Image (cartoon, rainbow, N blue to C red; front, side):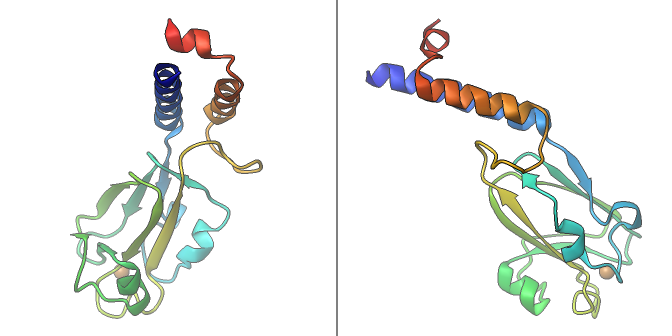
Length: 159
Ligand SMILES: [Cu+2]
């Protein structure tokens, strides 16, 4: 029984990983406007679902802005003094590797406090809540997970 449970777990993990890889998307922060001042990035994130494996692309004028990843408190106080990472190359790609919230600010004085900041909440991996939009493979993954739960995949797990 223990061995079977392990194999079922393995299948579920493999299926989940495959679905995560296959449906990973790249979001251009701010869409056509990119990463700049004068945009409400809270507005930009609303209605979007970010999943593990997705990427954020920040496009901006090199040296005019930075993409500085900070803690939650750094985000709310617009402080880049304990930055987790920092880039001003003009083209910054960030992979969302785990569930949770990531915080980014522009560390050019005055810009974060005028609104140039972004927080992104990355959803837990696993079955997607109904109504959420993700890649087309996710509904299939949901069915497989249900199948695992009902024991229909035992043969697959043991082959
Ligand atoms: Cu800026």
